[in-house]
Length: 224
Image 1 (tube, rainbow, N blue to C red):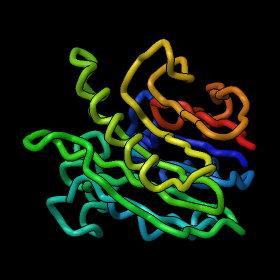
Image 2 (cartoon, rainbow, N blue to C red):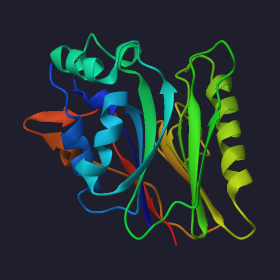
Image 3 (tube, rainbow, N blue to C red):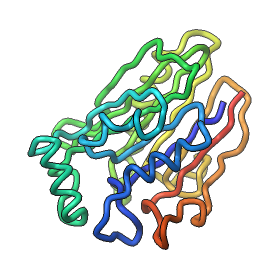
C-alpha cells in the first residue's frame, strides 16, 4: 500500500506567483494511483472537485471556515492568490482513496487548544489499517504546541484501530524531531506493519511549466 502526503500551499507555486495550480497538483499527486493520498492546505471551494480531478474517493475535514461563499472565495483567490488566502477561502484537509479501498469509519477531532487557530486531525479506518491526516500549528519557536497537537492526533488514530490493525499518521507536522522520519516537517509515521523508508519527491518531480508546485514536497511510504 502506497501512502502519499502533500501540503498543497493552497494551490500556489513556489516562489508564489499569480496563478492557482490546485487541479494540476491533485492530478499530479494522483496520476500513479497511490492507495492513500493525504492533502493539507486546501481551500474549501476545491473540496467538491477533488474526486473529479483525481478519480479517487475523497473525505475531508474543515479546519477554518471562509468569510465568503465558496464560489466567491474561488474567484477572489484566482484573481490574487497571494492576497486572498485561508482567511477568505477557508482551509481543509482531505484523504483520497483509490479503488478498491472503502472507508469503514471517518472521524474528525480538533487538536489545537481553545483560543488558537483551529487545527484538526481526521482519520479513516480501512480494512486492516487506520490512516490519519494532520496539519499541526506553525509554531517553530514553541515546538511544544505542535507536539501536543500531534499527541492528540496519534490518540485519534490509536482509538480508531482495533487490535492488530496498522496505524498511519501523515501530514504537515510543523515539527523537526530527530525521531521523525522526514528530513523536514512533512512526515508519515507507521506502526503495526512492515514499511519502507520515507521518500521525498525531488524538486523536478513537482515542476510545472517552469515553476515549482507548492512550497512543500510530497512525501510517501510503502507499507505492508
